[in-house]
Length: 199
Image (cartoon, rainbow, N blue to C red; front, side, top):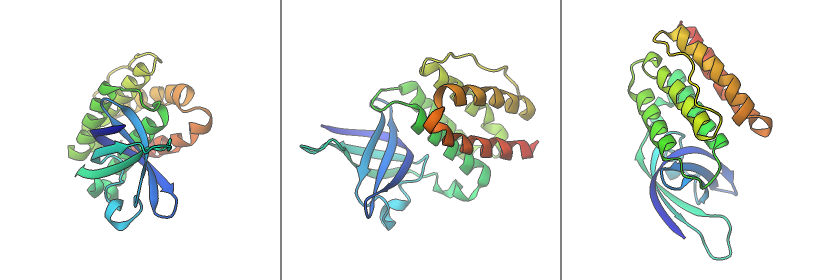
């Protein structure tokens, strides 16, 4: 099997001496986990950043259950790594998506919404330009996975948006990130603490 598709890099972890296991999101194949040879090398380090847009080429070798991926950088969010609030928001959105979605199930609306959220984080002059997008994305994720699409009350001010995020945090922790996945919530708490300091 071979798959070629644009994808969003969600997460990676070391695998073997120089490789990485990457988790990427595509519109048509959903969440895909695959081995990237040399994924921890100097050339690939900039590609493996969460939030980056990549061109994915996925192949499965005979007698191997582990897919292999070649990734080529299409759009980098690496410049935001040094910006604490945008970097934390990108890390959270990508970690949530990687932890919550089942593999190989297409969620084209989530792929599009995550892409839009990442664009907003990258382009907005401040968090006030993307917090409502984060609320919308988390609400859509819960809805797409069957946990209701009840959106918290809309708010234009940061205090109201933080209240909406608090409501969603409880639902995410209970429905999507319970048990072994609960460590992902640490990224969420860091994000909301940083957003609260803006107020």
